[in-house]
Length: 181
Length: 225
Image (cartoon, rainbow over all chains, first blue to last red):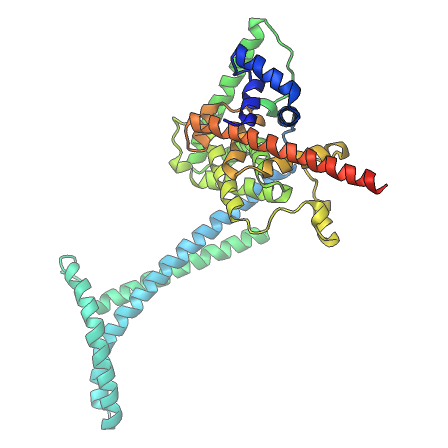
């Protein structure tokens, strides 16, 4: 315990009578101790009298505006994320589905060199994408009894994405009209 | 609702009727507040606006004393209320609402202080074009007489680590009980008592150094003359 600890304890009345008397004698002869006592008194006085400050008069109004903006921004971000995810899934499934049709079309065209390059590229795409989506297909096989063609899922996701995009667009238009009004 | 945030009438009144009235008022306020919180947790923004109205002064004061700047304090107080609204779903009604709100505000200010890269500058150290920026907004304490006291309080608070500063502000500006402060800062009562003791020690030590520096500069001025 250093000297300042003792000053605080004396100031707060936490010393015994004997300790307090001894400290008072020290206080009378020790200038550094006196300075600390005065400083502590000053600090306590400042803290006791310091005013509670007021915010600006329109604090609540500003808060309401800020909250509205924050909630709108959150909803938009969620909407954009969901739409992005659906569109990405739709694109991947459609690419996989159309790859087979692409191969069939190419087999009917002339130009064996170009045709070979395209066929090789598409075959790699089909193989790679096929592995991924076969895994997904296996996991959801019980649900796919009725809907077991990936192209259907691709179109379903595309439609869902377009509907979500249209709904969000309408919401943005309404919000813009409301803010202008 | 908070010690010195209320009117400072300290005349004692021994009649039981006035204390009964105060207790009744306090109970009514608590009941109203609980109703607002419940409505706000269901998304009622008007109800939450009433809560903001009730707590704007103490929360703004906490942020101002923590951050030392009026504009930054308002931004921090607004952000604290927004976080409180968005987190209302996780508020435990068995806990005192004021402690929960103070907890959000104090932790936000503590994080902000820790991220602060630029040391807080007094107005004297700012270039002239910067020192005029606050003129169009009313500053919290405008009295010329109070400026020196304000500076002194600010300097003393700056000597404290953020967690100590928060405890001092809650104790001395808002007369919060040790248990409330501990709940707001997610710590124990003994830790709060220890922090307050050490905070006073650090501030007293800083006050001694400040006084010494003032005496030294005064002595140098006299020697120069």
